[in-house]
Amino acid sequence: MLAEGRPVQAVMAAEQPVADSPFRETAWVTLLRALCAAGRSAEALGRYEMIRHLLADALGTSPGPELQRIHLALLRHTWAQQG
Image (tube, rainbow, N blue to C red):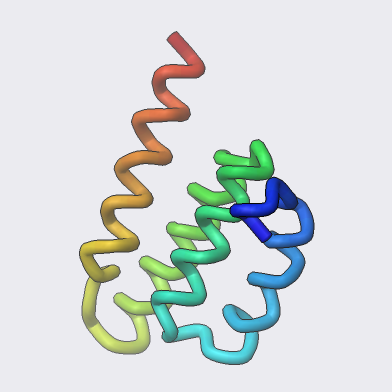
């Protein structure tokens, strides 16, 4: 859906896999990308914090490299918009 230029629909489609499998990082990656593409970067940052806390509290681990890259890209994009 993202490739088709339909980020709002991509967000809606990405919500269910995250709800169904909250520890599946690939589902979170898809959701964060969709949120960013839909212009909802602040929400994407909040969702990153959700998965970060979930992984830390439940498994004692941190998000994997792909989620960390998306987080950094979101931070850079958000910071650049404020400047």
